[in-house]
Image 1 (spheres, rainbow, N blue to C red):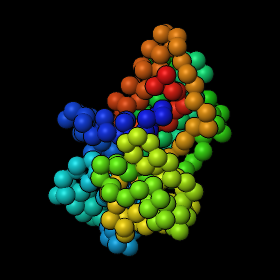
Image 2 (image 1 turned 90 degrees about the vertical axis):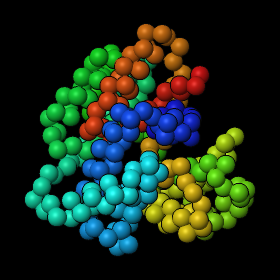
Image 3 (image 1 turned 180 degrees about the vertical axis):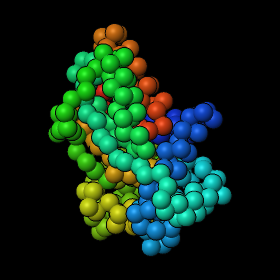
Image 4 (image 1 turned 135 degrees about the horizontal axis):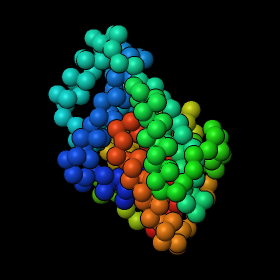
Length: 244
């Protein structure tokens, strides 16, 4: 979700404590509800739901919890309605931050996001104020320990489906695609039986910012930690090079 080490961050999340897992399950539960209401309860006929289910399983959400969420959403026609909102702004040292939320109370969520930026000495901006510095891409992460093939093997599979690039790191492969081609690329990978660490449409920074000032680093941690604590926050993207 942030910095260069996408794979490392995902693996770290998989080792999160019970409280963090509870938040992840809450987030995925909302995504299931939205997917069911938009496309129905059958993942065979609702690709978005199929993707959320795959995400849930990757996060080790129990199957019975997934099924209960689907049944509840399918039968809850007039229940809670969730709304997508995106916020953009700057943290200390000019770090660009995008916050995607899914909430049943937009006023509460806006206040929480505003407070996170304020506490960390950041500033919220208007729509488009930082998103122009990011590229929206389909991104699939594959753990090398879980895949026996080579980069060339993987490229043969995904390029035919519309992928733009396959990047190889020390411990993972990253498949990038145009958002319009993401579903086809994701399906090609799944049909080939290749396990994935994550598969999503994400925002990738065009350039990264290195921060050395300790006060700025502290402020960035405050913003990101407070956003991470909110159940309404689905994704946070930024261009801070945390590895520097």
